[in-house]
Length: 140
Image (cartoon, rainbow, N blue to C red; front, side, top):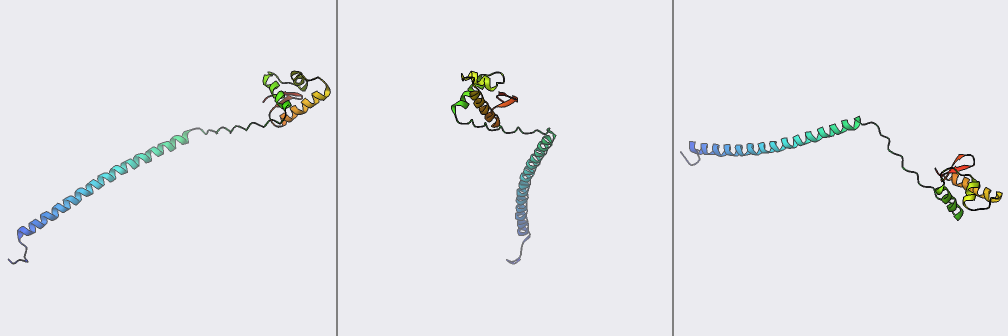
C-alpha cells in the first residue's frame, strides 16, 4: 500500500468520526425539537385560554355602561341666589315664591314676590331647581 491509499483501519476511523458527528447533530436537533414542542404547548394553552375568555364574554348579558354624570349647573351671580338655595337646602317640600320670601325675611309685597319668582324660574331654566307644579319649586 502506498501513502495515498486508505487502509481498512483508516476508513473505519473516518466512519467512526462521521458517526459521532451525526450523533451529536441528532442530539442537538432533538433538543431543539423538545424546545419547540414546549413552545408549541405554551402557544396552544394560551390560544385555549383566549378562546375560553371570548366564549365567557359572549355569554355575559349586554350591560349598558352608566351615563356620565351631568355637570352641576353654575349658580347665577348674586347673593339672592345663594339665599334662595340656602332656603331650598333646608326645605323638605316644594316651595312657592311667597314661601321663599318668608324664609328670606323679605316683605311680602308683590314686587319682592315677583322678583323671587323670576329668580326661581331662572334657576329652573338652568336645571338647578325643578318646578313640580305651576308655582311650586324644589331641588331635583
